[in-house]
Image (cartoon, rainbow, N blue to C red):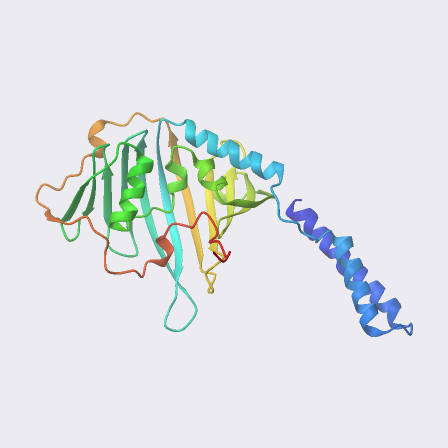
Length: 291
């Protein structure tokens, strides 16, 4: 159901509720029965009874976009991430980073990140992964598995390195979504995001609610909005994707770090854990069954 149709039905339902309530007010029926009848008729008229499920049109939009990403042997894009973090006053503060991403499947990745915090660079060449902090001139190096997917997992497990755009660059983007997918529905189209027309889809995967804007013509994601459902504060995370180039020719030296004079440090998890917006979303709900 499109946003416009939903808004129209809600307006009709509100009018219906007013008319029914006005008529019943002149009768002598019990108040609680009248109220229940009005709310039931209004809800039915608006079509607001929502049953979680996978709407075919939403799944088609997601699968088409994921298939296009998976088919690209190389890609470059810009990712701007804005995420909320609690403040001492209560309302959250918003922090942002911008990453220039270059990738060649199956074993080349470069992420150059600047933003609200120290700049960082990440390089992966199929054998090693390197994290470079240019302002401190520090370099961490570790052995890495032979695929991007596996290297990203090791980077997170051993160094707490996580990129919010991981689902875009893995070998099978749709599998990452589908593993915990419980709800998906098509919202409508927008002509605001990404300076193009986009299809809007909302879905729930694991414990994350996501709204995504995907180009109607090029099938590329332009904005991803996420909320962790198990987060009491319901902090918001927004990923803007732009400057897409699929299958560009990238030189091999594009994935070589220029840090000959840098001091070596261990590739290890940092002590700080305040970057709440940069953690990966859980893909599956934790079981509540008693063993």
